[in-house]
Length: 147
Length: 147
DNA sequence: CTTATAATACACTTATAAGGTATACTTTGA
DNA sequence: TCAAAGTATACCTTATAAGTGTATTATAAG
Image (cartoon, rainbow over all chains, first blue to last red; front, side):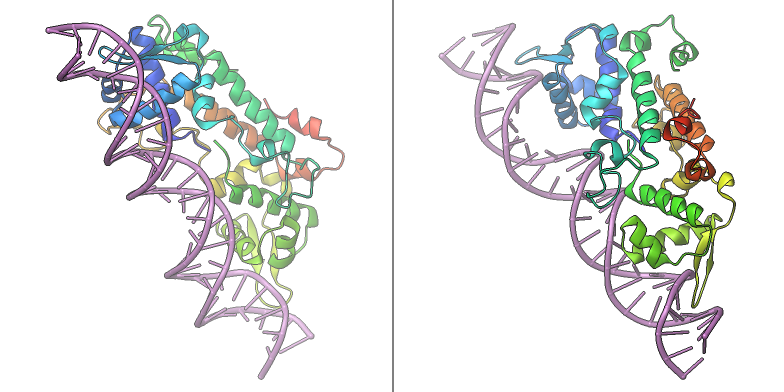
């Protein structure tokens, strides 16, 4: 029921890139987030492939966000790393609500899981990195975006 | 971001016990849920230890719920198996919001994770097995309990 | 036009947790 | 007393998360 460590790091990397608004190399990003440079590179590659960041090779190369922070949501990052924000396999695995793949009917829990998953997604989608880096917004104000 | 398979099975076992309202042996429960009898026993043991079911040994033994279905919520089962419904390690691990344990300040994401986790818990807490087995309630009506 | 810097590609390893089993034992009803 | 249940404890297997190694490619600066 937890987001992965990698997705957690990815959020912090995105936050850093949003704050800096300039090309940052993987090494300095890694230091900020307290992970190894290699692992930062791995995550950053996913950003680039997913269209959330652009990369520059060579001397003075690095990464910057591909869009403005108000166009990037927490959901974008979380789904980039962890996939869909589904809380149950009912929802993802081809509607197989029971163990044996034969039962294609929806189980009693299916719609409940679906509704709660979409509440999660929708809320993560409301919070952009523009909100997060906005020094005029308190943590409480950001939380009021939820629900 | 998913509940575990074991928690999923546990929900279905609880549902079955709530429907039956009599002593059921592990083998028949396992058949219903399509898992091995041994694994069903393992999960059922957690029910007993957690006070959600009582067990009877010997011939004609088995399990039944320890409380009435309206006193058992989806949250009870999910937390029994998977632990607290926290969506981030920020929340559980002693408030360590960053990788290095030294930073005890809350990170920008902390309150967001906390709020969404409690939305999840609160909603799972509203849905009892009495609702789920109530033949007069449609799936849509049960979902309206959420939020 | 060479060199240092930084990203890329792809394969690999290691750690952790999920998922599931084995064996021996205890209790109980017929 | 015996077979049908649950109990206890430990173990195994597999999947996934998490992180590394090595070689390659692109680029700016000197």
